[in-house]
Image 1 (tube, rainbow, N blue to C red):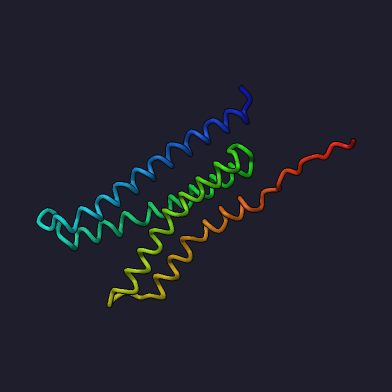
Image 2: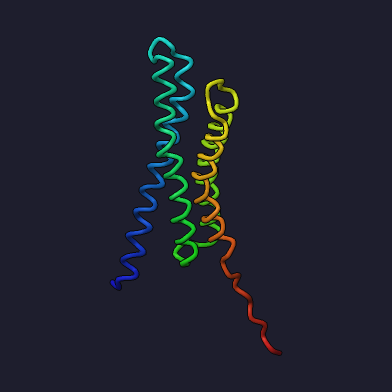
Length: 148
């Protein structure tokens, strides 16, 4: 097996594993967010909101980095363009969901600094711009016309 093929196989395997872990973590986060308010006797509200906030940062950052790596793999033609766009779109939606949630909390909370929240979300969503740029800067394959 050539080194490039081995590198490709290992990269795509790790990419699938990390992507699956991010999706499972996102599902657990959604479950915890929905389940917490309905069971106030089990979880204190302060612990619930702190746990959600702490768990959000690695998930949002992981989804953004995963989107960049998928964009690079699509750029290297290791992943088909349509599959790459679908995967980058899915991980972008996860990251944007967290961004919109944080901005909503920043706007509704009396003690939060909205400018700080917006700056943080701008910085953490910058990798998504890079991932989408990698996908849209792909050269389109031109079909050769047969000279008849």
